[in-house]
Structure formats: structure tokens, C-alpha cells
Length: 140
Image 1 (tube, rainbow, N blue to C red):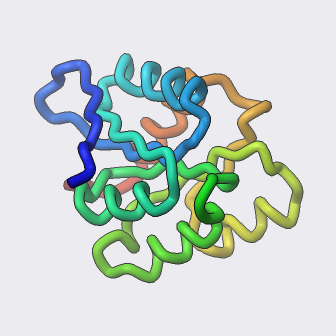
Image 2: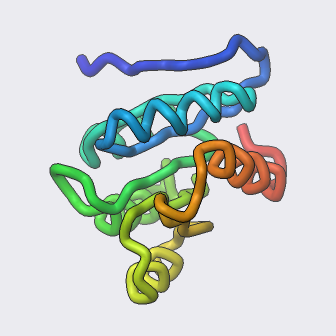
């Protein structure tokens, strides 16, 4: 059975964020800022692992990279949105791909936001997650 890594700062009513990112350094930076902001963070380094954790953990929000070692982020996004168990989970794409076509495709497939890694700092990602969750009526 796959071990799920959980990072939390100990808050009682903690929102769960699933980060699907293969760059361990970036993942740890963003996870650290999310934890400082009061979130619980679950990480996945591959798309397959991310899909499994999304269904098992039902996070409040998913941060999704597009370039992953086993499958593409757009394919993962399509799978998430096609699955009744995960279709309502907001997904923020966090990618190095920042072309107009990629951004339009991500939004068309159901991403709530599309962030370009080189244009955003980890604390800004945490702020974006907070804002995204604040705009949603009460989630689990």
C-alpha cells in the first residue's frame, strides 16, 4: 500500500491540499508556505499517484503540474473532472508551460486557475489557494 505523506501545522479544521508535482524542491517550498498558512498538504510526484490520492483523500483543492514523468497534467485534469468522486475539487494548474494555448486548454478542461511557475512565488501560491477556497461555499 502506498504511504501517504501528510504535512500539517497542527490546526484543527485544516483544509487539505494535494500537490501533484515531480520537482521535489519546488514541492517542498510550496508545501512549506501552505503549511505556514494553515493547510494540510499531501504530495504526489506522479500523475498516477496524484489521481489515487485525489480519490482516496478528497482534498479541498489540487495544485497540478502539467509536465509529470508518467502522464500529462491535462490528462490528469480530464480524469479528475470525469470522476464523480473528484469532479468538484478545484484544480489550480502550476506549470512552466505558459503559452496561450496551454492556459486556454487548462481552463477549458476545468482548471479554476492557471499559474506560471516562473511568475509566482510560493507565498503567492498559498495566497491564491486561500482566495480560491474562500470563494467556494463551505467544502468538506
